[in-house]
Image (cartoon, rainbow, N blue to C red; front, side):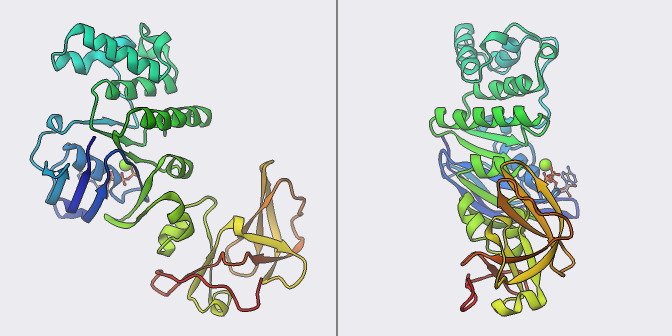
Length: 342
Ligand SMILES: Nc1ncnc2c1ncn2[C@@H]1O[C@H](COP(=O)(O)OP(=O)(O)OP(=O)(O)O)[C@@H](O)[C@H]1O
Ligand SMILES: [Mg+2]
């Protein structure tokens, strides 16, 4: 278990400033998820925490002790990457035991730890197989198992599921959630591009943008009260609808944002009217894309299957209290509803 504290951490590669002053407190046993656009510095931040990269300035501490100068092996960290580098000529058991053997642990202890981790990850039937005799998801679980047996204080995951197909991602996501619960307070930091992974796994999400922290909060805090257009547009799928100009003016804002699930198609007294461009019928939901004259299609979610046809004219209104307001610089303003509007 470790509480991790980043205090004004900076990292430059030559003249390139990549991490530009990140301060963050990660609690003991917390599941922290890093999200942000490609190139914003998520992997770099993980590598700084693991010790694979040197910190340019600032202090990194574990349980109150500065660890900037500690070698990776002294930090009690295990890292799982996107591409799992298993040893192809070793069995699953040998792959999982390898790091422990190197550190000189007794054979019996290695065996019992591997068996315990294999049980947790449903790998017990495969211990004698070679990596090439496993599916992608099983291989990734071996990579996770190899990290678990080292009994780390901190687990770092860099997009561990991104090479898996949709069904395996869901299954392995559940394994990781279970793992976090069963590892009694092991701190986990997890990088992902996947909205569902971020929302379902995280105790808190840290949204990074161009080397700085844009907002940190629980998944619902970020979903319900994003503090900027950037966070509002980054959290949630499909992306929040943004409207400016004459659409935002009645709300006394420069930009307003409304999520697809917070809009209603109504016949009378609609706030906006538009023409159906396209409907995506997913079975459980239908996403209706409307041209309301903003230049960008407005996405509206309807529950179940709705039968709107392209070309059809529809009225649409944001639900009461669901309009996010932003100023010209993209900062959030207090939420408000139009007087007299639904
Ligand atoms: N060793 C390095 N030398 C020089 N520049 C680097 C190095 N490592 C990373 N960078 C640069 O730092 C920036 C952040 O990279 P990083 O890999 O942390 O991004 P990321 O947020 O993980 O992106 P992605 O989502 O694509 O994985 C990028 O501009 C990258 O080119
Ligand atoms: Mg990365």
